[in-house]
Length: 103
Ligand SMILES: [Zn+2]
Image (tube, rainbow, N blue to C red):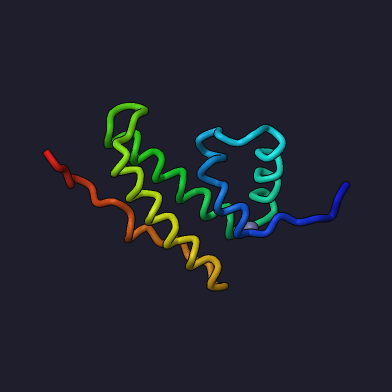
């Protein structure tokens, strides 16, 4: 077994892919193992999962509007930056606001 450890920043940038099953099985396993051992990353994963549920609920289906997806991704990036700052805190205040519609 390699002792090589995946950096948290790598894991966090790929957790979204992990959730969407967009990465290959080997990579999935690497990320899953990291999440198993790293509670800050696991907390981030939980936040992403909540956002995914929010997306699904808001759009009533599997296809979210690109613009909305972008906003979610942007808020995720903010969270990742906070993680890189050293102290990890799950912050969801920048997540999209419920009830905001364009039509
Ligand atoms: Zn980590």
